[in-house]
Amino acid sequence: MEIHRSKSAIRAELALWRKQDATIVLVPTMGFLHEGHLSLMRLARQRAGAQGRVVASIFVNPTQFGPGEDFESYPRDESRDFDLLRAEGVDAVFAPDATEVYDPHAQTIVETTELAKTLIGKLRPGHFRGVATIVTKLFNIIRPDAAVFGEKDYQQLAVIRTMTRDLDMGVEIIGAPIQREADGLAMSSRNVRLAPADRAAAPILARALDQAEAMAPSGITASRLRSHVRATLEAEPRARVQSVDIRDAATLDTISGPLTRPAVILLAVSFGKVFLIDNRVVHPSQEAP
Ligand code: PAF
Image (tube, rainbow, N blue to C red):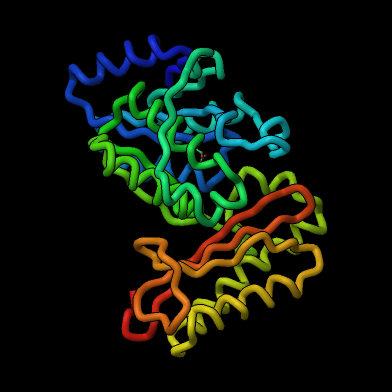
């Protein structure tokens, strides 16, 4: 597994693979890998096939963090990440630093105008512009046939699918199911920063989603379901609920009446300084998965 720090070096390796007609699948990450990321690598390998190549990128992208957010304290452990990727059979890693990625005179951004402003976009202004711009740059550098992203970042996946469609990027976007710890907590690189008492309290997100999933087929309205989920989360004194939203699972449009189509419940909850998100797609009775 080659580790490339520069765009020119990874492009040289990719050019050789393209001559062999290899399918190239990219898994963009910000490192500090966990089992959830490794499941993305496995999905990438399935898509690439034995003759294809899987490329992972590791880059903690400064432009998707707002002032006062956790860019500096975001956990990093590159050598452990490289070992995990090697063991997973990944073919190459692109791990540049910020000066390699961003030209100091850069003036171009990519933004999904509506999607970037709603939900997490309201809590973290500019976040999705940073994500869309870096993912576009990674697509331009690697030029993958397909790319894999986790469904835990539901809105991010929607942003990436939308920009890929709108800008005719020709990259197949593959969503990978959320991986959970034994107690239900969605895997995230940020989980290691939870204080022990917060780590013990954090599975409340998954429990609230389990309850909501069980209630969804009862004919309950989206607004009542939302109130119920919020009350469950607020009953946990360590949880600071940032947002609870129920949206159309396909379009992310707001819903308030009875659920008639698959809906996604999106949670953002802070424990101390750690910001966690989770989600679940739920189905009204006549719409069982
Ligand atoms: O999901 C992430 O880890 C990041 O947002 C991504 C897609 C790698 C872009 O920096």
